[in-house]
Amino acid sequence: MHDLGKLKRLSEWPEVRVSIETAVASVVGEIPKERVDLQLKTLDELSFPGYTRRRVSYFVTDWERVQAWLFVPDGKDEVPAILCCHQTVPQGKDEPAGIEGDPKLAFARHFAEQGYVTIAPDTITAGDRVPLKHEPFDTRSFYKDFPKMSAIGKNVADHSRALDVLCETKRVDPARLGVVGHSFGGYNGLFLAGYDDRIQCCVASCAFTRFAEDKKPERWVSDGGFVHLPKLKEAVDSKSFPFDWEHLLARIAPCPTLIVTALNDDTFSNTKSCAKAVKQAQSVYRLLGAQGALEQFVHSDGHRVTQDTLDMMDDWFERWL
Image 1: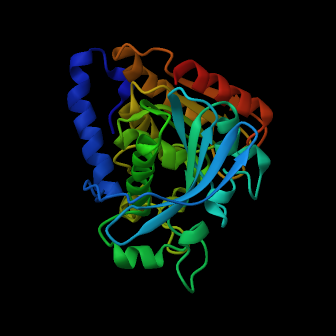
Image 2: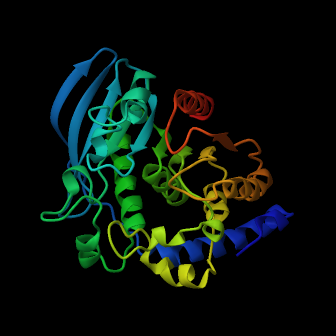
């Protein structure tokens, strides 16, 4: 793995970036680049004070439609838009929409109230995308259909299509797209920001701990449930990883990115290591002239989003998007 702290000249970065991209691609697997016709449809629509909430559907592949909640604030001017990724909850998109679940994770509703267009889609195995006769977050049927992909790669592809939806939505400034997520949603947002240059601002809460210092790195390659990155299994077994989270963060540079970390996270172990990942990646941000565009907010409120966290997110998007 590259020690990003040893990078001294900007001229060194392109070669290192290619090396990182190759390492990440070897684990994430194939990500389709073809764009099918979205055939975006509005299934129903409700008006609330300050915004309209639509339930929409669109194609992510030639045969696969996805449903999402789309929030459009009142007004006429073009506004920035935020993709809101859900955490590991069976209801999927309904939690960020504020319909069911933790109110503090109702990101799509919250940021619509702040004046952003927002979208909250289901990922595979959640919400309306749970396969027949399967439990939520069971990826067996996915890998049967897409053996050369990873579930993370599939989420990148599908979330990229959600950005397409935002770009086709009236009142959206397509040059000002952001992504936010907590836990499962947080790391899906980080991977998306690394693959899709349209993301101009990213916020990830309680999203990771460094692979090399994780007490349970097998979480990414487990045999049951949601198998995130099966091609990482050999690295987990040998404890020799082709990349770590600082490399993923560096790949996102110079996109403004806020990492929210809980020191007492009961889901991710050794979250103090996140500071090392951020510090290493900040070396690349500085080389790219984006010092201050990668920051970390640390708290001791456990694996959750608090009002303080929401306030930090508000400030970050207002500043950068």
